[in-house]
Length: 359
Ligand code: PEP
Ligand code: MN
Image: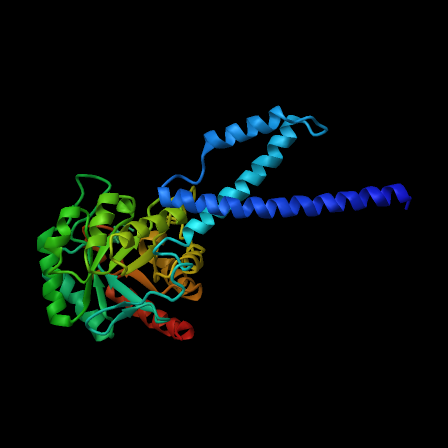
């Protein structure tokens, strides 16, 4: 190698080190700026400011790199700084594992828990239809040693002409059944004004997929002292899902259970696409328990069991599925609820599978 090349390369390496040192200094400053922005409640990304900085740099560009190259290089540097600020901000989210490394465990009066390396199940009909219907499922669940029952009394239906649920009457039916069978009751609330009324009937307030970004509902849920089962929105990103949980937590309620229930994609083979990867991502990023609803995600009884097993295998704290004494006459989701026979084999298998993963 010629001496000239060698010495040029040495000079380049010195410059690399200088650039690195400057980037480190810039990164530390960006972190401080991020901290100030957070205190002032200012957005991390400020396009106007970026534009001004880029214009200034291009005005001073004397080559040999052309303006576009300078622009691209500095855009990367700016992005690295905003990414740094965003990741620092995450540490300040109540639901973040960076803020609280230990798992949140949701506990119930009857000894049930969600989280703590246990696998917990929430089964029950899509809608509450009658006392007899709920009691039949509740008895079956209690006989199996289950601790929860679900059932919708306020149903967010696609068509206004479909069964909308029994309302408060439905909650009373659930409570009667709870008193007979000792199960914790999970039911959806769709109206921020209903939490107070529903408090005497329910053990867990569910917030459904369609309401994941109903911020007024989230804030009211945050003011209650009952666990909230928050379902992922139909087209919500994981980040949006986490921020929805943050709405609840920031109002004072830290008993939140996240529930992946499938998202809309172009795929039509299932009702929604079960995003199984959301489970470990949510477990890594938050300290909250995560459940998987295999009914509303798959919409297919023939694949519910393998999907439920997959959920447990990737670290879900539990599974939700719909069970109805006679699905053929169900007033909602008739095609995808298990009857008691189908449920019997599903239950036996999933309880076995859970043993593999419980610590
Ligand atoms: C439900 O669990 O009853 C329900 C309506 O589910 P989702 O909100 O996930 O559609
Ligand atoms: Mn349903």
